Image 1 (cartoon, rainbow, N blue to C red):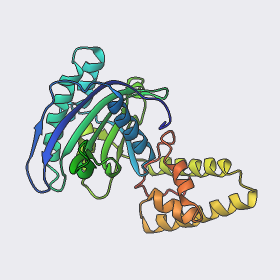
Image 2: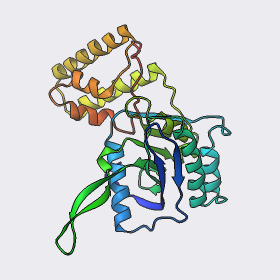
Image 3: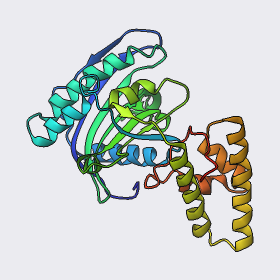
Length: 281
């Protein structure tokens, strides 16, 4: 998906002010960001970074729309009764409420965009921090310059609007991150990410099959791949330990784990980490 051209339908950036262990407040933008070359580069880079990240969670909206209002807001927006700016501002109220519940969370620029490409029509949301860098001005003097810390993307999520509207099962994805810091963002999205270990294990096996095919493995090499996978996943199951996809890649294909990671993180596979392997798969 990361190589598909993105058409930005709407884009807005708000500000979430929060230091770890501190209160949260928001600064709201009253208008959309114009879609120019800089905005296009920003969205393209964020979408590519997001697609490349391994360890996403997947799910669907919670049923309780009073507690998790995002689907109701989206429904109004898609129907044309709530404009994008108003929807995003109401989303920020929910984000502020959720981030208050996570003491260690930090603020940043909150980017909300509706984007279309050949793969899907989706709503993308991310909290992006800023850093001070160094630049040279027109007078050839060195000066500080503030820029977005794109490569440190930790808090982001995406909703496949088409799959949601047609009754799909897992149309929300989000970055799990480490620990509970990103938990507030999952609650903000209203995402139910309860996983079924059997289904996730079956998808992991499917990912291994796809990898073996993509590498044009000889039968002996394929057997070795699955023997290593079986041994490692069996050990996890015995210890009731959850799967970490990056570690799976390192254990199962140690010579080039990044190649296996790329297959396991394919968003069409929608494979979540964090489940205990089920031997029935």
